[in-house]
Amino acid sequence: MVLSAPVATHQIRILNQVILATSVLSIIGAGWIIISFCLFKQVRTFRHQLILGLAISDWLMAVNFLSSSAVNLSGNLLSEPPQKKFCSSNGFMTQLFVVQTDYWVLLIAICTYLILANHKHMSAWIQDHRIILWSLPWGLSALWAAIGLAVAGYGDIGAWCWFTSDRVRLLVNFIPRWIIIIIVLALYMHLYRIIYKAHNRFMSFNDEMSPRNIEAHSVSPETDPVLKKMARQMMSYPLVYMFIWTIPTTIRIYQSVTGKPAPFGIATVDKACIVIQGFADAIIYGFNETSLAVWRERFRRSPPTAPANASISIHHEIKVERSRRPPYDNNSM
Image (tube, rainbow, N blue to C red; front, side, top):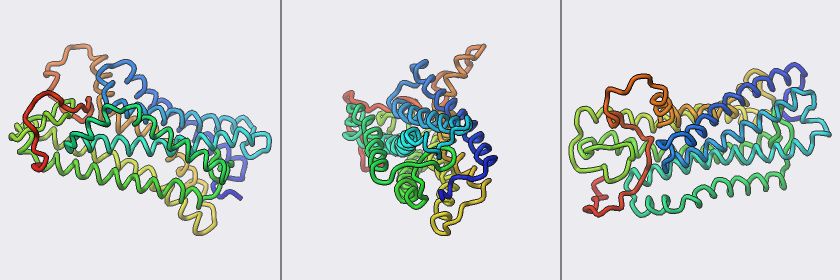
């Protein structure tokens, strides 16, 4: 018996209806990020190219969940023998994109840290090798999904196909995910400390977030609150992921230890938390970043009264300054 899969017919239907609705939300959220990237030059920057990769993974993952829930609601249950091939492919895609989104989140955090912490050589390298950066999440996730298919296989867990053993999912997916979350949290905490406490060393921190903007001067009273807001925004990224994955991880531990299924309501929330990731990413990377601002500007009826550089956030191009200038004292950070 698969502990994550409901047995009663009405529970199967309710669960798949919830997953179907949640998948649509994630498709809309991730699709909004993708469309914003295509329409507006302001969000075609280096950082947003990485966010685009995350949004594409979120969108495809949500479509995969949508397809499996739709098959169940059509009456062709994934647990039935005729759906075995579809279930295997669905489980492969689930493992591929769930792991891939973790890698994108980690990659975004590492690149942001390298550039904001003024690691010049690494910053220049990552921006000159964007194809390599894009290939890493796809290559690693495809490798792990193929190994999972060959070694353990995928089966119906209620609304989609995945590893049927809670213990396998805990060891293969959830523990590595929390390691990634802890690393991301540590990186952003360090950047938070740099931005929040070193106010007297920032002259300005414009939309491009490049090291050329970090100068040994004091911050104006108008800029100081913006830097604090920027630091708080960066900390929201790992905290949101911790919130999303707390319930699914707790359920995996509970079912692995006790061998008993969680109550249906909690199990439904468990699966919804996994599927909602695309919508959550759209909020934390869209509302905190440029995407929301450019849409507002697009539909603004009257011209803005404030200058374009009045607001500062961590959303524009991360770009290493390569013009001739005095070397920046890295020890002073």
